[in-house]
Length: 180
Image (cartoon, rainbow, N blue to C red; front, side, top):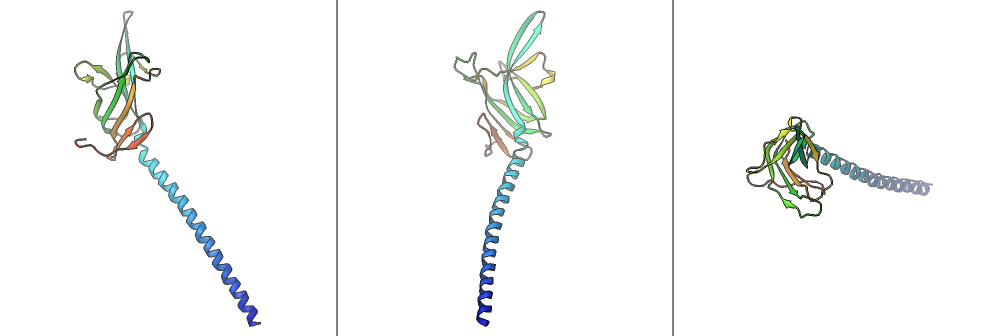
């Protein structure tokens, strides 16, 4: 009988060992899933402010006494509650979809507060002082049908000091440049 008791005890120990191995494997798998989920949530939180920054090309149309004038511009949008810093907006201009794009000098802003800002092209300084969109006289129309006239990249530093870049492919962190 002692022999049977030893066998039952050994089978119980083997069963307990198998259950412990299964529990450890399941626990490891759940830990990896939770770690991955935490990492994605952390990345999403880190990108939260950066994802609220965008820019596009616009045409500013002013009408007076039956005449209308138009100016080229760039609209910069900050939908977050905090300012971003050292904004650089690179763009191209093209008269039509069929003409070759010409790269413009970048629009640079030391600070971009929350809101929508529009900067008109300027003959001497390349870009005029950015005004809040509500203060721009005339109609501000986005350029949506000329892929050669567009913002090609925006770079900025968020309120946490992280430098970001955005283009039509996505949003990513970039290393700080000297003097920026």
